[in-house]
Image 1 (cartoon, rainbow, N blue to C red):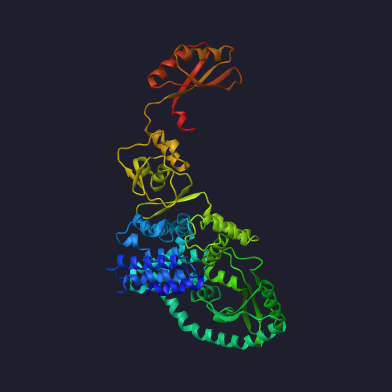
Image 2 (image 1 turned 120 degrees about the horizontal axis):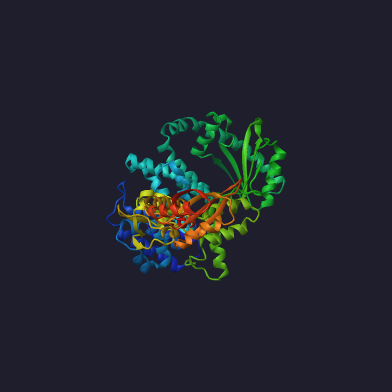
Amino acid sequence: MSYETLIKEYNTHFPDDKKSQALIKQAFDFAHSAHRNHKRASGDDYMTHLFETALKLTSWKMDAETIAAGLLHDCIEDTNTSPKELEKHFGEHVSFLVDGVTKLGNLKYSGPQEHSAHNLRRMMLAISKDLRVVFIKLSDRLHNMRTLSHIPAKKRNRIALETMEVYAPLAMRLGMQSLAGDLQDLAFPYLHPNEYKWLKENVKESYETRERYLKEVEPIVLKELKKAGIVPISVNYRAKRLYSLYKKLQRYDMNIEQIYDLVALRIIVDTVPECYGVLGSLHQLWPPLPGCIKDYIALPKPNGYQSLHTTVFSLNDRPAEFQIRTTQMHEHAENGAAAHWFYENKKATKNVAQRSANASTKELSWVNQIKSWQQQFPGSKEFVEALKVDLFSDRIFILTPRGRVLDLPAGSTPVDFAYKVHTDIGHSCTGVKVNDKMVSLDTSLQSGDVVEILTQKSKKPSGSWLRLAKTSHAKKKIRSRIRRDSTVPKKTEYRIVGEKHIDLFKNISSIFSRNHIPVSEIEMLSSEGSYSILKVVAEVKDTAKADNITLKLKNSKGVREVNYKIIQPDIFLTF
Ligand code: MN
């Protein structure tokens, strides 16, 4: 556990660079001293956690800023270090990354109700703003999962569940298959201990048998490839992950014999044409299983995964699965967005003819990631769409002080939030704190904001809130509350039945004008037979006045019947 290890690993991916090395060393020393009195639940020095987090990031070929932030990621949360202080020592980018990781730490998965896993994943991406924040958080989670046995059982299960429901799918979404598999396999024994035990006991032999079989198959394949002039870069055995095997077994009545890809032979070649060449050779050797040829090169999976898969009736007519891909596809398959990030970073720095570990946050922004990704997979609309749905959606994600996540339409204000939390919170809202600062009720909320509504029992919503609220939910609640409270009617609707007469309309309206009552609506509702029915909405504000006008109307020539009802002000209904 030393910074030299990190720098050595870093240098295998990036050219020797004193500035980057100095940054990593400085972060290492800073973290070491900031956490000097901390222990992990395992009894280890806290530094082991920070080191492992950073080391994993290094293996994903992250830049020096990310590795430094990985070392410092618990500084704000667990020591007295402020973001300002980090910025002073390490610059705004490192401080931004650590701050982002700290923010993600506030999110808590509250269980399978209310679709919160999905929301939480979306929110994490939305508030991270920079993919590197997510990478650090994932690396942090991986090490926490590796050391989970030291945590008390109740907390342990919550963390395992959160890992399975939120973090593993997030890694998968980012195309980081290897990480997703690790996280699932680490959470599996805590969430399904009996199934895990059963699988462990029953699968070992099957794995070994399958691998032995593929070892016999391999030389035959290599010989055939040689005939076609193809020399693979590498051939290896890919054993199916335990949790993914468990999921598949559930669909096959727990019959391991039915799982052909328990162990697959993976062939890595140099170019795409060679990939198809290998596929052709295999099919010349052995007949493929119908429906088992998958061309993820022409049609990548939504997370960007590319590869050719085929299952053939191989030696002794037994099915064997093959996966064929290029080196770059392989790296993408294993590390997904992280691998992509690395290539983009290299490209970007080549362009400016100067390698810089301080590539600007803007340059590496999430949006640019997506754009360049789009260029890289121009045929895959599906992929880009999948990302768009999550990232450019018109929803924002807001936290309660207790970490509950609520999603609202973009542009929502604290008023919308308050009514979303609870109608009574909305009604009694007197003010709001966003991220611990008092702000006005018309503030437009941003994803990741922690919003605390201040309330007072006697408080009632005001009509002006209708202008502040963006959601129809809040508007509806405000209107109905105001309506309930209004004791002074502002308008009265009259129904007047009169004999059909050329002056009826004129006579009635003149009664209102003589009494200086503004009329907002006068309408002939029907005029059949010898009677007409008129509707008049006028600003008669109390029942005494309304009765008085009724009397006058009744005395008017030809009027037979007058009814009225007091109605609520229109203004609130049509806002
Ligand atoms: Mn941590």
